[in-house]
Image (cartoon, rainbow, N blue to C red; front, top):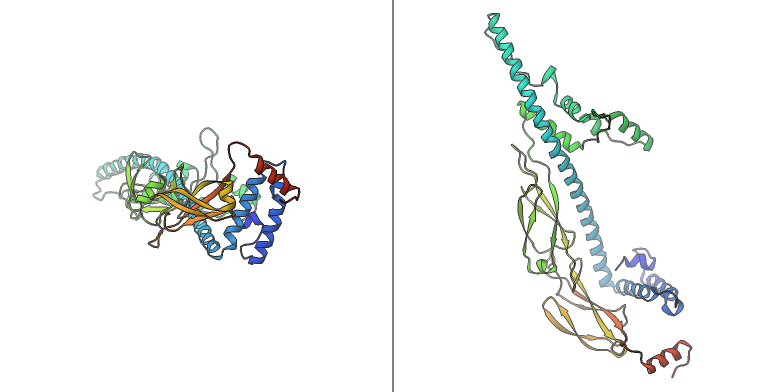
Length: 378
């Protein structure tokens, strides 16, 4: 279901009377009897009814607000993990280029040092020249990055706080062209710090970073996996397999952190792996937070008069009572049959009722509906 506040057109701090008035106005506008030429009118009317059912009940409204806040936090975590993965990917690719360049630089340093020692011996000098720790012609790590990637650490770290024209000007000024004349994309600040640290460590000037960057993956699980707290295997880009044990409090969008299972670089502490939970499609249940949702088709007579029905749950079939005068906007909630939450309990199983007609038209029901439409009650 979409955001009930948006469906009813009310603010999140709206009072109950305001919510009720908005529902009445919306229901009157989209009622199927007023929109007979619109095939989607029935579903829109039911959706508005579901939104009102959520917001009119204080407890259900609180649960929805908490779930919405948690969803927003999860999305922020997922975005942060995605950005970290992109930075780590760029850092790994660029680090490989730097290591190749360092090998060439050290070969040149060794050759230069050997020549210097030979010259010193030829002049009768006993003191050896110190090794060049900055590369050819006193090149610093930042200079090497600029030469290899066409961007300096200072340029990349400079914030673009001006308007779009100023930002474009800064980008054009700092971007360097490669041999083919095309512009190279800017390096992330994390990649620059990582590469510069590798260069310094290779030359023995500063210690290596304490930890390599984190990487993120998407962990696809089933509803059954979450219910049974199974372990799933994650296939990594470097052909590694990492085992993720599902725990209580995990649901769609949750980000699990696996220590030391992320990016691995020589001489550094391995980064972490951020696994974002994605629940695969299930024919029986739909996941919303820690609640499971399912649908139950009921007949017209049960919708009007009430009755009993059997519904499938994660723990087998259960009999439920359908209240009289239950429309397709009504739900029946079975407590404690959802996913394991982070408070030691479980969410609920929400049964969404769907009114269906008989396979063949019934003349008596048709006559009754015709009389009701035209105001002739029998």
